[in-house]
Length: 170
Image 1: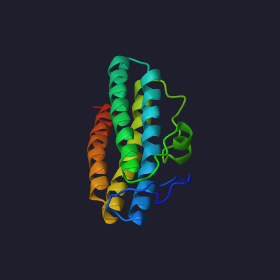
Image 2: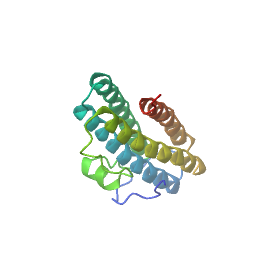
Image 3: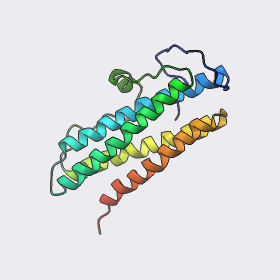
Image 4: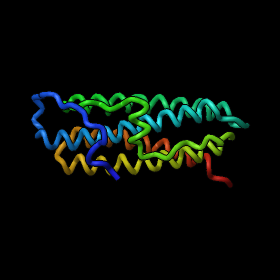
């Protein structure tokens, strides 16, 4: 579910953006929720990258690092969209941990498939959040933010497919 307001209050700045202040406030709340989840997913993906073991170590180590790099780009895109709308990006690690929609990463994950399963679960939850954000920001009349989310959604769905392909046994 997409949040309509972030818990921490943040300052808004004047802008000549033609979206109403009300729309910008609602959209930035959604974006800040996404910022928290994206930061969390990135760090959980790095957790898998650092700690994966087993016969597929190298392949998964590289895949997880590539996925974390993509998420880092999305962190920046989302935070910059918040500020472009006159809002304040709420992007510290503590803010992300408090606001993220994702469950904590399982510390006992060791082998490749443990990590793949944990990440697939989190990517699926994040993908759902992103699709809800597409709808919510579109309904608010912010096509640019909806488009940003659509771009993110395509990559997240592709990565979920990559993860789930590892889980199919013949």
